[in-house]
Structures are given as C-alpha cells and as structure tokens.
Image (cartoon, rainbow, N blue to C red; front, side, top):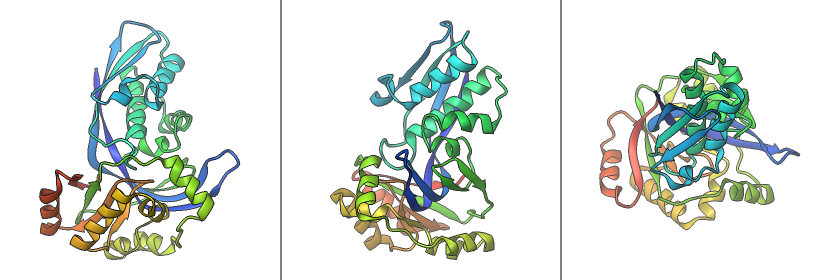
Length: 283
C-alpha cells in the first residue's frame, strides 16, 4: 500500500493563443501548486487487470471519469497481472479551476508506477497522462513552471515565494471549462503580453510578479456567472485588486498575499460559511 498527495494546481497567468483543429487550445501559462490536496491510497488487489475507485466524492466513485480511466490504463498496459483499489479522500472542490480530477489522475499514475516498481520515467508518465487530460503532464510535478502548447511543454523555473501565500476563495459554484472556452472562441479572450511577468521571474521580483498575474478566461467567467462576479467584487472591496485573479476557467479566485496578512485571515474567518476559503502555502 502507498499514499500519494494530489496537490491542487493554480494558474498565476493564462493566455489563450488560439484554437487548434483538434478542438484543443494552445495556451501560455504559469502554473504552481499549493498545499491543498486530496489524499490517495493505492492498494494491490487480488484481481488481475482490475482497478476500483473508492471515494467520499460521488463523481469519482461512479467509475466513469478520467481518474478511473487512467488507473485502468496503467494496470492493463503495465501491470496486467495486478489489480488495485484506489481510495481518494477528496478535499479539492470539483469544477473549480484547481485541476482536482487531473491531480488525482496524476497521483494515481505516479502511485501505480511506485507501487509496482515499474520504473517509468517522468517523461513516460507525462506521455501517458496527456492521453487522458491536457493538465495531467504538469500535475505530475510539484514545482512552478511555464506551461505551453495544450499543456505538454513544461519548463521549470525558480522563484522565491517564501514571503507569499495564497488566499483561495471558491464560491461553491461549478463552471464548465468547455462553456468558458466556447464563449472565448466566440467573443475573444482577454490576453495580455507575458513579457512583464516573465521578466519579473527573471529578476525574482515578487512585487512585479504580483502586479502582472493575469487570466485571459477571467472576464468571461466573471461576466457570465453572478456568484463568481459577486465573490470577485467582495474580495476586491475587502482586500484590494492587486494580486487577485482567477485560476483555470473558474470558479475559484486566488489572491497572492504577503507575509502575515491579518486582513486576509479575517476574511477567511468571516466567510467560511459562504465560501470554500482558506490561506495556503506555495509548494
């Protein structure tokens, strides 16, 4: 038996470069992980070729999603004489822009490789992951990176997040990624030049980095969802707009905060009943 932590992914920058003929979009992203995670336990099962998912999340338990598909693929392709039971303690909100399903699938791919000593390299695991979701290759690593293409081009970078934390606010609203991209294809994406934020990383300037975080999908989500718009305005009015953005296609909003931010802590205490909200560390 082994245990894996599937850490939530957050996007600190997204541009949508264009739609490809296969329906995917080419992206320009800056991704990192925070210490919000699902806990995944993988046990060998005495039923060759079988993968079973158990979870406190009904969607994951229905045996028809990318999480179970990735587990079945790993067993059938690389350990056909083995079987597994995967137990997922779900904490990351579903449909929230935090790559919850993708990080779970990545943890399962990584975990099965470890459990059965398959010896697959990171590159091999990422090539497996992209069969099931464009987010999965990045979700197999736990460091900040530039992510491009549909998610397959990953370039690690070093940046000092020591003095920073992430206020995460999810308004308990599901947003369809497909719907957001469909609207973007129709009306356009709110892209900006990435040179400034890239330069801030080169200079290791936290101040400049915070000023230049951006999400080209945010305006679409905020303009088309009352709960997300209300949450965004609430955070902006209470804590200011600097360092505030959306992650993924929503509905989660994040704000980079510095040091021991008492106002952010007070926001969390006052709004735990209204939102899924807390302050997390960067990995």
